[in-house]
Length: 121
Image 1 (tube, rainbow, N blue to C red):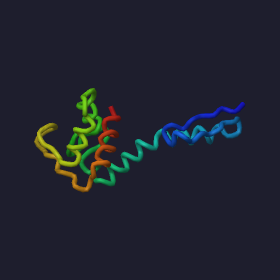
Image 2: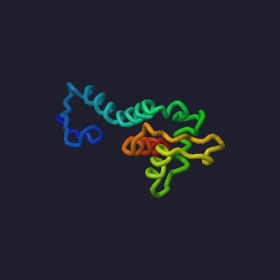
Image 3: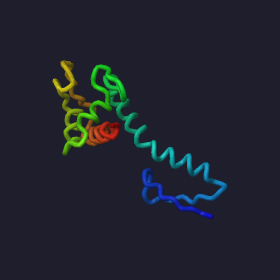
């Protein structure tokens, strides 16, 4: 029996055939493809120094990413609002410590980071 599985999270046009002999490799490949976007965006957050003040699950200098995701959950335009805050900074939303502007983050990266943060609910 051969099962063809589309790898939507890696490449929508790529397909892989699965047989009894190679199913462990297919499972590992699928797991890597599904987890890759989260790791890639966490790597981007690290590269842009976001992780100096924020962590995924606990407050550091700024709020945790999960706290941010909860605050913005269900809001129309949340990703765009958050991307702007990532680039321009903000204050007063999570306490007295302001978030400085992140001039090293361009609009495309800010949108990727915002989408990743909002996915962490």
